[in-house]
Image (cartoon, rainbow, N blue to C red; front, side, top):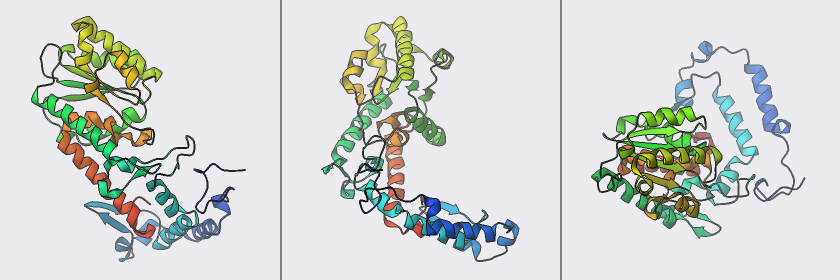
Length: 327
């Protein structure tokens, strides 16, 4: 079977790599498992060198593998499998902007969302840092307006609640980040998330909110996702019944690649935030999809969030596999 460019293994082969289970490294792991299967963790923990050999750290994050039923030999064999399967080469291909997203034949360059200019990320040979920074600057202006009270609802009241309407990566990423970073939340703005097309989810959320002080974010790459748009239209009806159709532009913003559809919905250009097809949904929290976090924790905290991810990116790209935390 012939592979697409994104599916080819390092070296450009046109045929499948052999299944992992048929490789020498896999067989070595299987042999190791047969020998080690009878080991008990309490016996392994008797080795006073174990903790040092199986603990890795970066910038305050500690990964301790010593409490698992494996040994340094296990780890070495796993790294040998990663070497044999070309993990480092595929990592480098991802960072180079190659189309490693095989199902869509696209780049998967979410690392560019938290990079510095000198990191040099590009897609199709075109640098993307400037575009990314432009969206971050737009987010910063929007967040500053909400924080200062210069951006308010239609009646002039400051926002007290922000509802994110999305599904999949447009919901889970910001939802988890807001929950994890709740100690950094600023007073006065509560994040809420709606993803279920069952009307109960949105209805119960809206019952806790005041239309005059509620900001709604529609997070949808295409602005056509059925579940998201059903909830968005319900939220718009709730708002306009209370404040009139002119309130939509004051209370709604959108994170999307389909600006025209968002404008047709009633959202102004000052409340449109873009992202790119090389950002996969599950990694999109680092883009404007993370707007709920920026609004509730502040833009400085959001930039710190990006900087922490960049630290791990640099470690992932520059550290040998045997000492590489993500690997």
